[in-house]
Image (cartoon, rainbow, N blue to C red; front, side, top):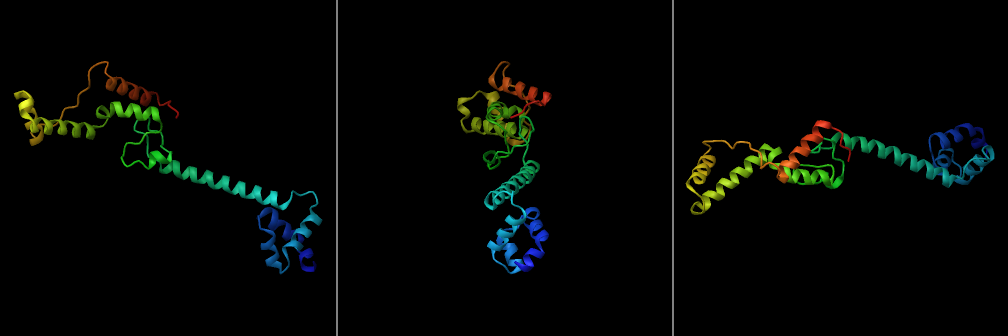
Length: 187
């Protein structure tokens, strides 16, 4: 093992510190991987077996890559529409709409209070209601038809309004506002 024994400190450093394989070290010195294994066993008799050592290195590398990827995902994650915490679940991120929620509880709250919380959805709902009234004017009174005409012509803009007191929408809205105010919700 002539030149391999002379470079034992370098071989030990490459294997233990750099994580090189037996084969990579053997290729560097023009020797066999078995010669590298024998050298490491001779100078480090109490070391853990190569298979165990390499598996531990791979596990540590995977863990560090996962930590980095989790940090990237957290930075790029859209906020939950209820609590504004990052939405990191893949299924939620892949959602085709822009209203992401971080947990099932928030999805339920959002579905109940979405027209109160989102002006754009509210305006879409009002416009849809107005178009429906104009489609079947005979089923509605004159005031409703006149209101629908003014909404669709752009003469008036939809007013924000709250639902009946005690309704599920109003309760959901109040719960969302409480979560936002406290800022203490952890999913």
